[in-house]
Amino acid sequence: MSRSYYIAGNWKMHKTRAEAAELAKALAARLKGGKHKYLVAPSFTLIETVAPIVKGSNIRLGAQNMAAEEQGAHTGEVSVLQLKDLGVQTVILGHSERRHVYKEDDGLINKKVLLALKHGLEVILCVGELLEEREAGKAEAVCETQTVEGLKGVAPADLDRIVIAYEPVWAIGTGKTATPEDADAIHAYIRKVVGKLYGPSEADKIIIQYGGSVKPENAAQLMAKENIDGALVGGAALKADSFAPIAQFDS
Ligand code: PEP
Image (cartoon, rainbow, N blue to C red; front, side, top):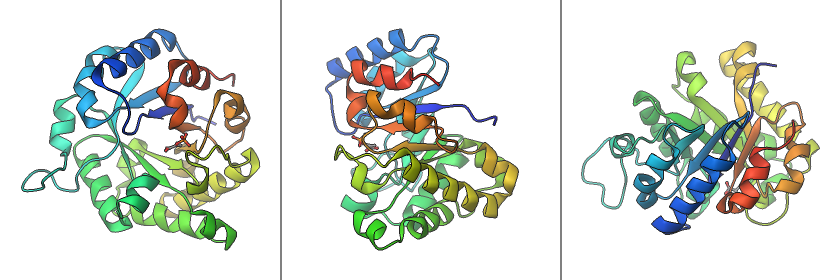
């Protein structure tokens, strides 16, 4: 397997500039020489503070969202051009909080994916089912639709800049983690969906992160699974003492 592990921290709507700088500095120091791929995604207002701290380190600079349009009359939105201007390399799109709280649908998310790729960004495309969808036996179908619709129009040549994050919504911020077996089964299914769209070698290459209450105590068991290639971490990404051990899990 040629895939490498990719551990990303989504800081959500947390931290002031001083707090963000402190965390970024601690991570840059602790992850130095780390063997996996890393990313932090601070709030828009913190990006300029964090950018020089992670520049030249092994930590990529991410954003948590972006507008579906390049620029224009879009009050309150942030454009891909503005993100690139700050040195952002990766954007998280389709996070469940964007889908379910802010009602972003697959069409809008797909538009953002295509725009981000057009401007050379890497995309972490989040997919995942609600608890009622899982209980109704629809987890695979939901993830399939979100994957297929999210990737609509993505050229095979751009697929190496797509990462998928499987985040069962019921496991996000709840302390409930999918069992490694359950998570791996959905990851395998998503990989099959990518295979149907792009062929088996692309399916084998694509990085699929797991997200949902990943902690230092459960990271290694999750990552040991064949189809789990890293993590998108929320709560535990807010402290170096919890993110660093996840990022440095023993593979
Ligand atoms: C997330 O929101 O992407 C996430 C996985 O959060 P948490 O780790 O807090 O469950």
